[in-house]
Image (cartoon, rainbow, N blue to C red; front, side, top):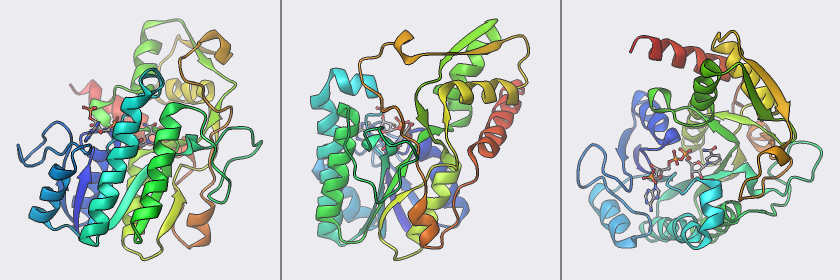
Length: 297
Ligand SMILES: NC(=O)c1ccc[n+]([C@@H]2O[C@H](COP(=O)([O-])OP(=O)(O)OC[C@H]3O[C@@H](n4cnc5c(N)ncnc54)[C@H](OP(=O)(O)O)[C@@H]3O)[C@@H](O)[C@H]2O)c1
């Protein structure tokens, strides 16, 4: 297939590009900052003219829309910008796909749920987002459903990945744990870690089918940030740093977080697709690879 990606410089975009190419797809990775084929690979999703001319030039079979403002607290401080990029940008992509009769895959988030359910959310639960970021992503989902008949909406949990470019939770925990005797992490909010390679594989499996719809694609199981941090420090082989649990009240943040945003991949299972591995297995593989590659630098 010929696949046009938005947000391809991001944490998931890099892995998805690599995996799609390894599977023999032709990939056109684009981002708001140019990547490989400057300047043609620069697409700002808020500019529908840029999107439409790229689609006309490249004539993809599908658009995989990953571009987003993902800084949850930044979105809370500047909601207009979140709605511009995450909602109206997604609406632009959806309309361009509708007009060119293309399949669209949109990566959304498990944080569209309010967090008051005691067990992981599945695709048949009702979303009720509680932050500007989550509302902007949910409204993006609404636009995709309204505009594009052949769509996949794939919800991710707490994403990790990115390898040597990783600047997010896993890389931060490793860096802090190497520097400190004690590391404190929140133990009263729960989610499902999601390895970028595993969710990328799910996206490509879905694209090879006609089972359009909304899917959860997190790794199996759930944990708190404390449990995730403990596992990271363990898998990285860091000794001499104790990870301690703390309450989210100790780390006040601008955006509210759901108490529970863990997900179950019920629809993937019901439709007969392979469900991602348990989160510890994927995290172990990722952290060991990351520590190994950084020690060779
Ligand atoms: N990270 C998570 O934990 C998580 C969880 C659930 C769902 N998701 C969703 O998964 C998708 C991928 O996430 P990610 O973590 O890989 O995100 P990321 O690393 O923040 O990458 C997003 C990319 O989109 C680009 N972008 C921002 N504004 C744009 C615009 N107007 N036009 C085109 N590109 C633009 C960003 O560029 P700049 O860096 O220059 O802004 C960045 O390269 C996103 O849709 C996100 O909402 C992420």
